[in-house]
Image (cartoon, rainbow, N blue to C red):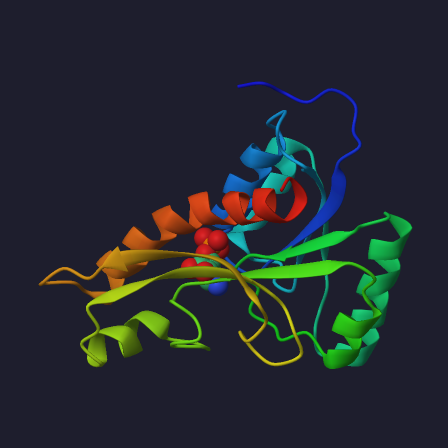
Length: 193
Ligand code: GRF
């Protein structure tokens, strides 16, 4: 694996709430020489988020913010991001909805990954709803974050076929494998055309 030396890379914050498998894949990607980004901080709304372990493993700063008072906490996060000259936010399984004003005030780009073929199946419990509707395909999408949930411009998508005996678990696993490849690809598409 070619590692980058020095850094003119886009300073990036990854926001997580849970397992952080997308965070892990983004960190690994960021260490490749060809990667246009460096991951400078991990932000979570959940102190029990397993993904926070990657902070120790990869020696990346982490900050946990309690979202009880959204306005206040968003101001604190913006301050932290500005201080670190962060230009890109990657939401990766982040379960809080950022306010319009946060999105407007962040002077950079915000990306999200969603486990469906947007604009279909926005929001939560995606896989359940996909199976209930007897869809033939599902997949994942990386998109720019806009004020409306899961509705910003789509950067890249990957389609997966739904098998006969698919369950929400098997579908989630199958799609997650694709997510780990799609997020880096989408970042390459934006920053290294
Ligand atoms: C992923 O399926 C992502 O698309 C969704 O939440 C899940 C997060 O998984 N928004 P992980 O925490 O990256 O493992």
